[in-house]
Image (cartoon, rainbow, N blue to C red; front, side, top):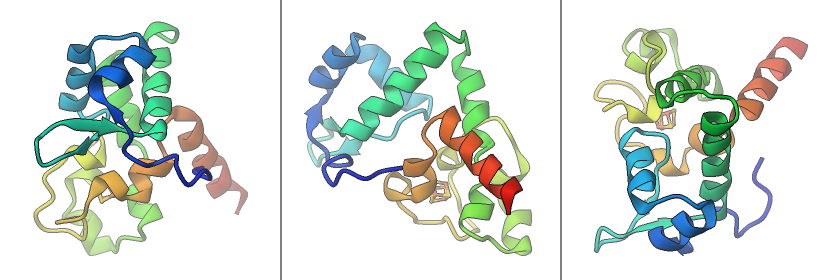
Length: 147
Ligand code: SF4
């Protein structure tokens, strides 16, 4: 969960973020293209990253390097985040939502055209922000079962 008020501020340019993570700028761009990360975009189209993005990316790197999970696997894990439960979508909304009915990519990778997420900014959505790693997804599941 996010507590530090600076945690989500766009502070780091792409080269600096790549340096901290010890990866190339190309790899960072590829993660964005794959929908694993949504950086802040300036008008100049330059990307900026927050501390929470760095933590998310560390988790992605760990999943790839230590747990040997592929990028497709990570996308599938993200697709399991129960956004419909967190945002309390109606049954009709669920029926019209690809994110609810499919399981290959995160909800924020779809172009939502006919459900409540149409026009929403995923970058600041709590589904994107709060459930950035497998641990937090599992915590949500545990919490759901303890009710
Ligand atoms: S606003 Fe975006 S991140 Fe939030 S639930 Fe909708 S698609 Fe997912």
